[in-house]
Image (cartoon, rainbow, N blue to C red; front, side, top):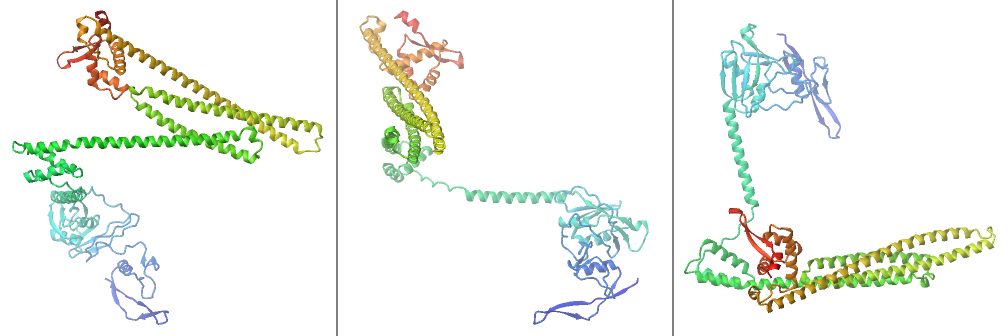
Length: 610
């Protein structure tokens, strides 16, 4: 083998005292044999130096001094002897140059770089075993160990007689290094015999031991994750309440004293509840528990009084708010009245245009704010009307009167505004006529500004006419609302009169029933209908049952009545219907599990009997 000697000059860079760079050349020569120029260039490239020949010329022209390496040649291959590290990830677009690997008993030649990479199967989970095929026929287990021991620690080798084997490594990353040898051509020694050569094919292998170890590792990670999650939940869990002491005579006396104290009542009653649920009550402790329950019952009146006090405070606050809102609304009405009086012709003619504009803007803003407050007050009153019961029907007339008075005041204000606008319109018309007369008498050339004034007055006149039409429409709408309110008031008065007539008729019927001699009516010594509310209920129930000829259950009837009034009680309705035997009759319908009680209307039959 021919040996070439290359002189390598090593340059050392130092810094002088004046910070000027100087080059110090060490003339020490190194005589290194080189069997392969490419391998020698790769070694020089890994050291970051440009490979030079004897004449000082670079061996390879691809060396880049800016990068300190040659382009196209990887700096370090993972199969270099002495490297037991995981190879760094290689970019997919970067070509990988494989080199010749020399072993003691064999030599590995890299595959053709133009060929596609060898195909591999899908990697099994936790794979540590590889399949190696294409071995030479004369290959031994020792030669296989020599080839693959540089990939990592080998645990087991299972060799077959058909030129393949399975190798199991200690770690998973070693499989990736073994796959690097896939496609290499192997030659035993310097022989060229077919039995001493082969082409390696390395692929993932599926082994039960690898799968078992991977599953054990996954279960261990899952256990650690569950433990970590459990610890996190325990850390975030709210603290448990303090334990309740066990029952004893001493603890019973302590709890009894706490039950009498308003500030410690909630804690003591929780302890009492726990004792009762535990079953601490027996003949010996029954008297003690009865006294504690009696103490707890004494707080019912206190709680009811507190609730009533809070409700009273709430009603007082509502009343104060309503009064304050009504006072604010009255002041807004006064301010608007001031603006309207200022807009009348007597005072309006004396203001300038800027003053008139400001007054109109202020009036509009005040009216908008007044309307907003008025709507809010009306909304509060509507809510109060919805909460009223049937016993408070008379109070609705007062609210209607207040609404009517508010509408009347608004209608009067609109009438006054309409009058003031008419006066302003007449004033503008008079001014226009005067200007026309003056324009007809005097020549046009004397006063050219009169035409502009005339146009301005005509525009103002048109604006006033449009505003007057809007005010008239609003006035008509308010009058229609006022008439509607009056009609509602008349209907309410008629309804009250009808209810009073019904009440008087009911009283007359009661007195006549007391004077009659029939045995059935003697049993009804007192009238079952005691109030106007009961009369309304009887009428509504009769109408409802008349529509349902097959009858209806008491729950169905009460569900219909609850839509009208939520305060109606089922027991009161049932007792009222049971008292009127000639009007309502209860029957049993259905068979077996579907048996139920139904109420039917029998007023027409009862009228014949009475």
